[in-house]
Amino acid sequence: MIERYARQLLIPHWDQDVLSAALVVVVGVGALGTEVARLLAQAGVGALVLCDPDEVSESNLNRGALFTDAHVGRPKVEAAAAALRAIAPGTVVEGRRAEHARGVGLAELRDADLVISCLDSIADRVQLAARCGLVGAAMLDGGTHPWGGEVRWYPRGGPCYGCGCSAAERALPSSSMACGIPDEMGASAPISAMVASWLVTHAVRVLFGLPVVEGLVRLDPVAGESRRVALAADPSCPLHEPIPARFVTRSGLTVEAAVGALLAMTTSGERLHAWNSVDPADRYGPLDLSAAPAGSTLGELGIAPGELLPVIRNGPPEHVRYIELATSRPNGRDLR
Ligand SMILES: [Zn+2]
Image (tube, helix red, strand yellow):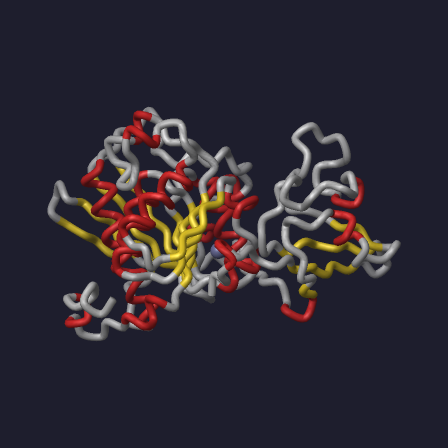
């Protein structure tokens, strides 16, 4: 393994041990996400959680770094994980085929060494920023334009993605997380690769504890420029109220557990909620897990591993506490 990394070990401040111990969550596994994952794995990051609900389409093949013709029709996270295992067998890769709020739990965002957003819509980025805000997690975000892109670093305690959005943008419902660029906007491999390279350079420096440019960097290869834009915190941004740790109880239950097992951990005056609708048909209320069939597993209800589920006690005084689910352990190995 030392020989594999011999050249990067020559880089000042490079710390392979830090990388091999790191867990990075990559949300969105389209053009940007696949290239980010490839670079992280090749650099020797120990564990990657990849999250995306979509399947590989033929129109992804012009820029999806890990996708081939044989992957068309397969879930993006499965195709990417298979390709990464061939490129970097030392990296543990877990694919979550789901929208991010159903695929990566709040405790996983909290405990990850880094969360990288490779999403393609304002609404989905706001939702991820909100979830990172609930657990005080930093977020690194990238985006592409037809001939350029942006890299945004939101360290813990600083401005978040939502600070740069209007109240109306912050209120947008999260859309289906299509991770390709919207069909009407041009997108190509060189631009995705450029933004991904910046993101992963930021990422490894964050992991090493080295200084990273805060705020937004606008990349404009046509003008031959990269330009830094300072970001200011918006005092009215509501995404900065982390859940106090004292209100969180670890359950030890995974998403394989039946909802009844979780309900048994609540009292009669409490209601167990989910963050998202647990039933597309709204047969038992969009957020209320108390009414879901007791035999359903949490995974079947769209609950993410490592999720923090709100338990609301009816007032007065009304009070919210949270039950933490255990994270999954791919291949029997702890992700940590
Ligand atoms: Zn904010």
